[in-house]
Image (cartoon, rainbow, N blue to C red; front, side):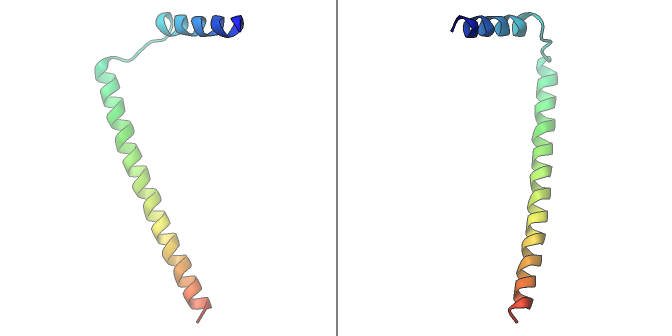
Amino acid sequence: MAGIVTYVKESFEELKNNVSWPTWTEAQSLTILVAVFSIIFSLAIWGVDTVFSKVIATYFKYING
């Protein structure tokens, strides 16, 4: 158990002293970039899913006569 406590303490020290955090402006612009990319990616997946579902529906409609 002492090993876990030591690990957590050292992790927080690492975060406080050795990690370079972005500025508030950089964080905002990166957040917007991630949000835009996520929306575009989800729309692309939705489009591919829609096309595949129509192709599969057409295929089974053709097979069943």
